[in-house]
Each structure stands twice: as structure tokens, then as C-alpha cells.
Image (tube, rainbow, N blue to C red):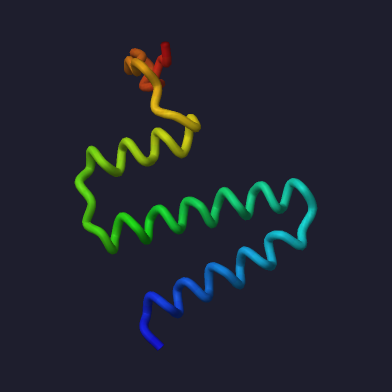
Length: 79
């Protein structure tokens, strides 16, 4: 079995386990798995940083913000 197939199977198995937990455990597990999938995609596709940043922003905020300014403290101010 190819490595990609084994990884996909592993993630499906973990997803099934996550769905059996409490609401808090499901939320946490889903977020962790989503991040892991994103990391695997980035590693496999060798995507440009700008594309990864856009995907991460969309994942965090649910949609691409119209404008994002970096605050002095490092946070991003969305308008």
C-alpha cells in the first residue's frame, strides 16, 4: 500500500475515533486533524508560502478577510 493511502487510512481511522468523543473532544480532535491534514498537504505539494498563508487564513477565519493589518503586538486587525 502506498504511503499516501496509509496516511489517508490513518486519518480516517482517527476521524472515526474523534467522532465518538464528547462535544469538546470532537471539536479538539477535528481541529487537530484539520491542522495535520493541512501540514501534510503543504509538505506534499510544496505549495508557495503565499498559497499556504491564504489557506491558513481561510481556515482560521472562515473566509478571506477584505483587509488584514498587522497590529503592533503581532496580532492581525481584520476590517
